[in-house]
Image 1 (cartoon, rainbow, N blue to C red):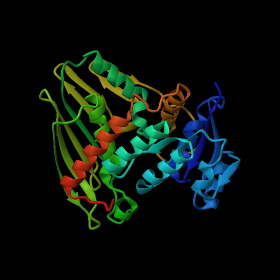
Image 2 (cartoon, helix red, strand yellow):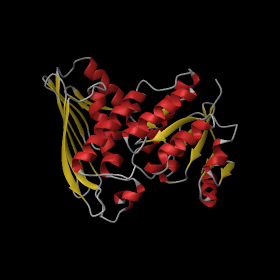
Image 3 (cartoon, helix red, strand yellow):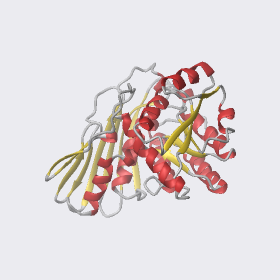
Image 4 (tube, rainbow, N blue to C red):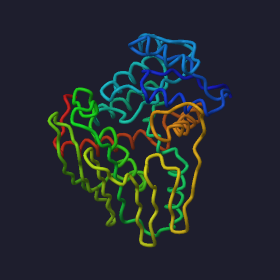
Length: 332
């Protein structure tokens, strides 16, 4: 099979790490054709670091490039919807960073649009493709810890009130940026089931953005999930799956952990290796989701079964309910 040809929209830190992840994969399977940024110099700098020949100073130019099959979108949250539609309008498949969109309405609309265009679309929840997540699901399916009744997952990202992450005009919030991992973890454990009830509270900063949240998701058959996010204290940043016969644990950082603790011992899964510097912990593991995108596109699938369109909608709905209960409101 021929290599999947990538275009990279935006030249920020996550795009750099995404490219590092791609370099751990065979060139016969993945090829980066071009990078685009609104600042052409930034695109050129990143392209030089990764030996990529084509650069564009606008997103429109890149999505019109006939040599590109799929576009990776690493832009800020409010741009995910419009840039994904731009790529789809030009016949490109899309891998878009989480959260897929700023709210559930946009998420549903984007999913419907991709289906109409008959193009592949996936939310880049990279955690789902880590070997630890796969093994966790296998342990759950094998009933190794009995009936699962409780999930406890936390994620903190200490920061000042003036940090860009906190600015509403950037479409950022602790729930959208890191709480999404807590929500998707609970959804992964409980098989994408919709909670019966969502109970959440938290605190806002002067910009009206959440700086903390404590959430309980109540599921059928007496099952619950406890989700904690914070910007002022360090949380364990681990994922616990608690059953009637024992506990499974993804230790810090649970979203990209290379270890799974089971009642019978700890399993380890080494990361892909690269000699290039990365910005975010364990981000060579971004390569796992790239492989899934290639498998899906080359087999003619429009979505991944591991993070389906319907589950992206569900995750968006849960996050939206949490934000509303905490008091976060975006213009969108």
